[in-house]
Image (cartoon, rainbow, N blue to C red; front, top):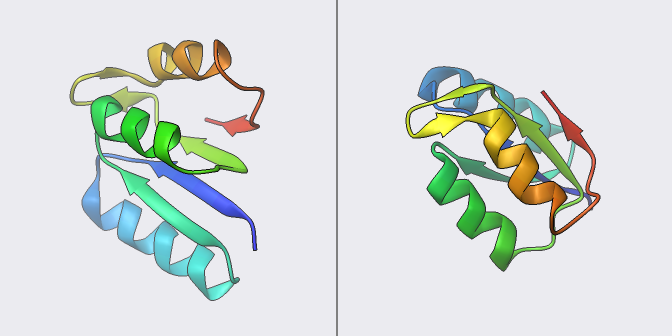
Length: 77
């Protein structure tokens, strides 16, 4: 089972995407902020990241840069 990190600050949207992905048998972690998402990323094996551009504590591009320094995991904005 593939593991996806969903980075989305809109809770309703995140819940809908998470629900759909779990129905397709994906393991899903949801991060609402850059800080929370970095922690999830560092503590879990992630196969794909779905990344929002606008987040409450920064932007998705900064998080993408951080992740790229550590991994080549696929990222979809």
